[in-house]
Length: 421
Picture (cartoon, one colour):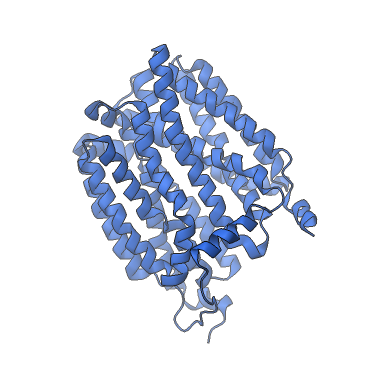
């Protein structure tokens, strides 16, 4: 029997093919998360929807994504990630078709809900499989590649989606995406294996859902973790809500940018976010601590959002650079998530990471749904095209400052470990 630390060297081709399938799945998931930002103006115009309706439909994806994290973990233990992930993607196929044919808010929300349900287990399931195949060093390398590659989905949801929308229309585009999703689901089932053949399963009997929920309560008692959760809920969600939801309508309503040009500008924001993600890791390693990097990124993001609120009505030559820098600085969430994971003791890593992911996705759902209400209410009261978006930027900046104030007392991992002992 081959030892657990030599699986990668023994089967490099198989693990590479599996990782490739996981990357394709992660890119597609990220694409669907961000897709509403480009097509929102077309949907609002065709179906006569307001900002609140668009926020609700977009947030539905993240609501189910967050809620399912714990049940999915139990399903993985019972049936294996390969079956669960590929099976759940059937819902994403149905959701994409339903979204494409929707002519009411209820069907639009249901479509996004099903898409979110379908992709809810993709990333976590991929990580579970990789952890069973790879030694810790190779697992970390593969996880980094998977996370970095997933951001390509945000890029594909900008200019390419805009070009497809102009050529085919958004409805036909989502029908095509349902076919692509079906192919990806079959590919995942075909090439991925839960664990190497012949490896003895020592996981024992899986926890029940009730036991898993009780176990999560231990995570929230980890010293300092509660102080970090509000900022985790806001960090990633702030940027994905700009790029994937309100960036497109803002460029359309305030600056009159349409079609492919709008997609091109959103792609610049997505590139800035990817660049920021790649930059913050080396900065954190050089600094040697999490807190100063997170605080600098969070305060910088909040300041930029408040400036955006003040100048949102001005020319694109002013607001676009501010949006780009905001997306770059806002990538501090990658270090913030690392801080949260580092605080969690080894025996709680699995359920702790799942809990943090649920908070991150739950925060995104609340922000997208709530921001739609803010944009629509302020726009209806003030009347100017920029007023609703200015209110969104201002409220988001203020919330990040409040969450950062709570984060200030969060211990570094070594201090937290000393506190536990």
